[in-house]
Length: 354
Ligand SMILES: [Ca+2]
Ligand SMILES: [Ca+2]
Image 1 (cartoon, rainbow, N blue to C red):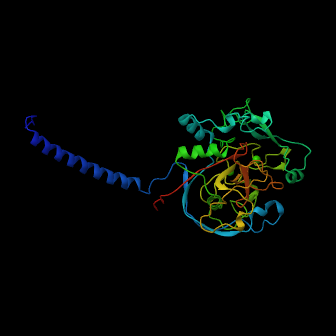
Image 2 (cartoon, rainbow, N blue to C red):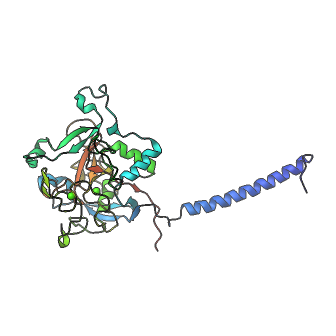
């Protein structure tokens, strides 16, 4: 029987009944949605589960002056998390730019008002780009702070990593480079992820192995094979490219580590969330450490350095030697350069065991 407008009491009862059914359906729907949402069977795309645990972080055998920031080795416990299986690629970063219209720091000129003491050429948007350099002793340069193989290049951005004449058209599967820490944070927020802590990064890099010098084990070149993209030859002049690459390589060009993570050694350095300090391990907590309260600032810029990990295509076996899981370095927050990228992590839920 059709309801008529002449019977308001009946209408009200029907309304209450209908509302009750609606809210019942809504409640049941929300229950099943929330069960589904919290189901741990879903694996985030292109991420792997890092189980967490207790490990020896750093290295006590790195006794030489250049690597003393890796000590003392100390016991650290971290919780499980998801981690990108590769460095974030140009293709992934392009999606972020397409969705948000974000403009990276290297694409913007700095204001002379904000930096009154900076030479005009350093106010142009751009990045520090490596240039092959003859006739220098990097050990001498390293101690004086003058590193002539780094050239500030106006117009060098993630889209044009070597400057305005370059492009990334055939490099969409390469890690994105020439970003600042702020740029990287904009990406992680958009992606609903975060940067790893330094401790999470090292735990993941070790791939389940205990106290090994390389992410794949004991030998640098097992069975004569190169296991990562770094520098062979006379740095900073000649890279012989024995590993197959004299530049940044496409991600996944070398075998994954024990957790299924690619390029945790070399290719590009990877930014971490923590501030950097060379002496932090002397005071680090053992439970999920999150770095010092302030960044190391040796040049008194006022901006401080964040941790970068893993070394890059520019690390050689002598001068740099930082394509090892315990190696660490700082990068100031405003610098973009063509040997540093990043990968993201995300928190739980724990995946189901099959
Ligand atoms: Ca190489
Ligand atoms: Ca890397």
